[in-house]
Image (cartoon, rainbow, N blue to C red; front, side, top):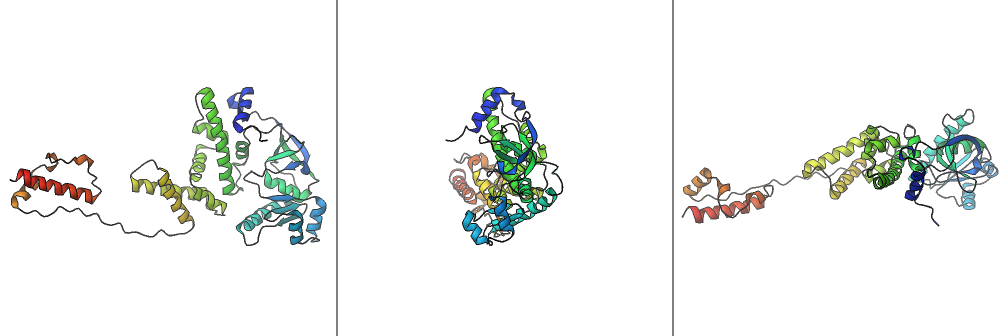
Length: 364
C-alpha cells in the first residue's frame, strides 16, 4: 500500500502551521547513532548503489579471503559497490562508464574516511526516524559512507536528527547541499529538479488556498540560492542533452554550459523570428547542444539564393506604366498584405498576375 502523496502531506503540514514556516520550523537535535540503524536514500542524487556488509564479512573482503567472483555470487552485488569497515569494492563491469563513475566516488570516500578517522566532521549528515526504529539518511551520503569505511557498520557517529521527516525532503536536501563546491554537477542539477517538483506542488496548493502561487523570488529563497544561481539552474535543466552530458561525466563549468544553451536558443530565435520557442524549436536546440557536447560538427548547408522573376517587358508603354504608377494601389485582385514576400514563387506569381492585368485593363 502506497503512502500519502506529497500534496496530502503538505495539506496536513499547512493545517498545523503557517505557509512561511513550512521549511523553517523543522525541529532537530544532535545524537550519536549506530550506523547499522541508518539506511541511505536510494532516490537521492548523491546515492550510488551500495551493498553495506557487516564488519566480519568486511574483514574477509579486506584480507582477500573471498574473491570478487565469490562475493558477487554470494551477495548478488553485480553493478553495485560493496562497502564496509576498511573495504570498498567496485562490482560494476570494468569496461562500463558506471565503473569509472563508481571509482571516482570510491576515491573520494576513502579520502574523506581518512579525515573522519582522525577528526570530527564539521558538517554532520542529517537523518530522520522511520517507523521501524531505524533512520533514513537525508543529506551527507558521501560522509555516511566514509563513516562506514572508517568505523564499520557497528560503529556509532554523530548526526543531525530531525524529529520527523521534513515536509519537503528534496528541497531540504538541496538547501543543505547547494553551497557545496565538491558535489558533481549532475547531482546538483538532479537535486534541483526534484526540489522544483516539490515547490511546484506547494505553489499549486497555495494558489488554491490563498489565490496566489509562489513567485520566482520566493522559490529561490526557499531553495536557499540567489536569483542568479536560480537562473543558472533553470537554464541548465531545460534540455535533456545538458543533464545527460553531466551524467556521463562532462565537467564543463555551469557558466560555460549556460552560454552554450543561451547561444543556441538565440540562434533559433534569430532564424525563426520568434521570441518564444515552441516544442519543435526546443527539440532543435537540444539536438544542437547534444552535437556540440559530443563534438559532432553540423554539416554546412549553403542556403539556396532567392530569385525573384519580373518577367519580360514587351513595350515602352508597359515599362513606363510600371515605373511611373503605384502598382500596389491597382485594383487587380491581389491582397498585397497577404503575399509572403519571403517566398519567390508567391511574389513571382503575383507579379505575373499584375502584368496581365495592366496589359488587359490599362494598355488597351
